[in-house]
Each structure stands twice: as structure tokens, then as C-alpha cells.
Length: 103
Image (cartoon, rainbow, N blue to C red; front, side):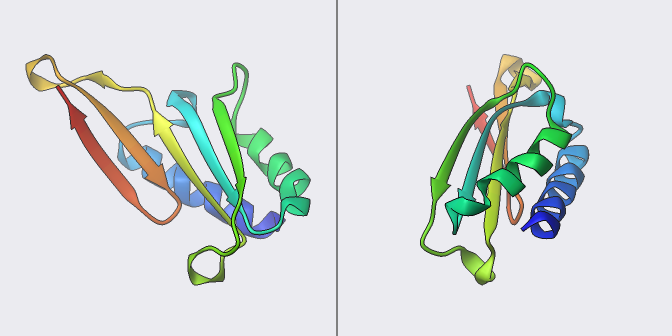
């Protein structure tokens, strides 16, 4: 579990960097585990990437994840002012990158 979770966070870090964001910009994390007994191992890696105040977090037991993964994590980062006074939200998971605009 530790190596897979570490890899997930490395992937998330790369996507955050590409979006000019960091883990300090994260306001919510969603964690999906196929086995809740892996929570402590996942949490140990999670604690390396976040500092206080920690973002809100949900942890959900999933029967299965795509491609046989044991863990999947998605992040929501702080919105910021964009062109025309609109704000936007960047939503990231270890497999996908979503960008939504709100106005």
C-alpha cells in the first residue's frame, strides 16, 4: 500500500504543479480505498504531503477501483480570480485532471 500511495501523491504533485498549484492550495481531499485496513499506511504517506491546517477529507471504502488500484485520491484546490472576475476550481485525481469554471 505504501508504494502505491506514494506514487499517487507523486502523480498528484505533478498535476498540481502543472496547474501552478501546490498541496497548500488543497481545500478538500477525497480518498478511496479498496481495503480500510490500509487506512493507517495511506495516512502515513498523506501526512507527508499536507501540513496544518489540513484540508477537509473524506475516506470511502470502494469495492473496486479502476485498473486494480488499491487507492485513489482526488483533490479540490482553492478557486482564484480569473479573467472577467470569474473564479475557477481545479479538480484533480491521480488519474484525471478536471478544470471547471464558475461565473
